Image (cartoon, rainbow, N blue to C red):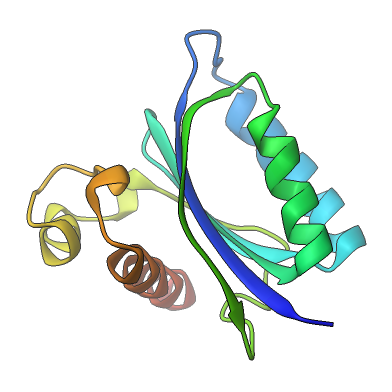
Length: 139
């Protein structure tokens, strides 16, 4: 079985409600656990940056479900690659909200203080997520 890592970004739709992020997290954690998919989700009230890791089949299926989810729009695939090991194996879906991330982290990886993952390189988004992982471990 090949392991793959997929990173994408998307924007919320106008119909996105205050409880939708909790619904997304609960569903992702349940489904990902059942399918051995791991990852990390970052959300800033406007857009998502998410990393999915697992078998090619299950990551592709999960991403397909996200593409058909009416809470997501403007979905952009940032990176898709085979990997030899997972980086987020401890979480069926780790999560961090933007309130915990400072502008200088955005500056470090994008050259702007505003979070615009669609304007970041694949390497920058991955390193951004690795720093979020470290922040989650510290909390």
